[in-house]
Image (cartoon, rainbow, N blue to C red; front, side, top):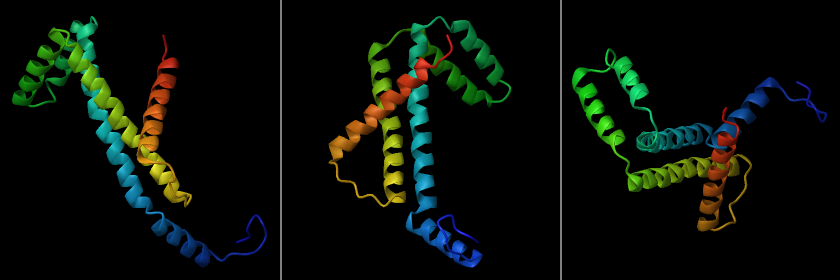
Length: 155
C-alpha cells in the first residue's frame, strides 16, 4: 500500500498500527463513555420538557399522545405515567422548571466534557487548564450549541 507522503506500508503493518492506536486511545471505552453521558443527559431534558408543558396549551395533544401509548405500555405502568404526567402539567411550577433546566444543562455539559476528553486522548493532548475552566467551557459550549439549535428551529 502506497502512502500519500511517499513510502510503502504492508496491509499487515497497517492493521498492527491501527490496532495499536485503537488500544492506546481506548476507543471502545471512550465510545461507551460518550454514549452513557449523552443518554444520561436525555432524561433531565425530557423532565424539563414535561415541566415546560404546564406553561403551554398542550393538554389535548398530550392526551392524544397518551392514548397512542396505551396499547403499548402495560396497564399499571400506564396508570402511573398518566397520573404523574397529568399532575405535572396541571399546574405551573417555576422552581421545578428551573431545577430541571439547570440539571439538564449540567448533564449535557458532562457529555460535551466527555467529547473534550476523548479528543484530548485521541490527539495525545495533556489538559493544562484547571477543572473549573474546563467545566465553564463545557457549560458554555453546551449553551452555545443549544442556542444554535434553537436558532435553526423552524418557525
